[in-house]
Length: 313
Image 1: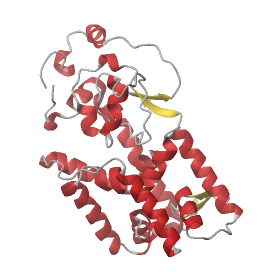
Image 2: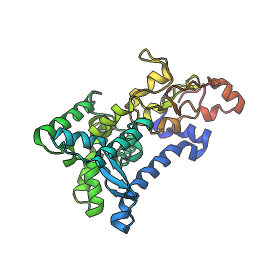
Image 3: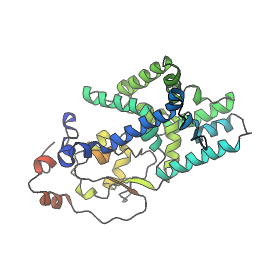
Image 4: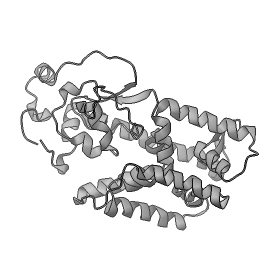
C-alpha cells in the first residue's frame, strides 16, 4: 500500500490530532531556534547565557562546552598543548550525546537541518526523485578526509568550510557568504541527492553517528505488529535504511530497537504513524507486547476510513 505524497500525514492527523502528528517536529524546531537565540542574546542584547559559538562556548560563563570533533581536529593539526577547560568541555558534550543519541545534534541542534528539511519538503511537493546516490560509507570517508587534511595542513580544515560556523558568523556580522552556503546546501539536497548534505557528506554527522552507536536512548518499534505497511515512516525518515531491522526484523535482527548510529532521533516516524508503532525508549528495556492493529481498530469502532486499514493507499 503506497500513500500518495499529497496525503502524507493525513491518517496521523486524523488519529492523533494536528499537534500529535507534529509534536516532535515542533519540539525540534523550538530547540534549534532556541539554541541560536541563546547564543545570539550576547552579541545582540548583552545577555550571555551561551558565550561563544557551537564549536566552543561557555554556559553561564562557567560550564565549558566544546565540540569533540573540533578537539580531534586540533590534535590532528598538531596542537597538543590544550587547556583543561577545552578537554572538560569536549568531555561534557561527548557524554551528553553519548547518552541521548549522537545524531540528536543533527536533528535537534544544528541549524542547517532546517534548510535540509525545507529542501526535502520542497522535493516532495514538486515530486522530484533522487538523482544521485551515495554509499553509506561516504560520510565516514569525509570524516577521515577532514582529519587527514587537518594533519597535513596544520589547520582546522573543516572549520574553514563548516556551514554552521559560516552561517553563525553571518548572523552576527552579516550574512553575505552565509546566504550562498545555505542556497548551495538547499539546491544540493533539492536537485542532487535526498538528504544529501546531512545524510551523506557532513563529517560532523558521521562523527556523532559513531558516538550514537552505543547510546541508550533509542527509537523503538515495540508496536510493530500494528504496522499496516503504509511506508509513510520511510518517506519522512532522513535515514530510512535504519528502519527495516527494527520494524521487520530484517538483516538478521529481531530487536524492535533502531540500533543504527545513523538514526537522528528526530521523531518523524513517531509523528507520522497513526498506529503508534514507534516511540522513544531505552535500548535494553523490555516492553510488553502491544495489542495488534485489529484489536486497536475494534476498540475505536469503525475507524477504517481514518486508519486506512484494509484499503489501498
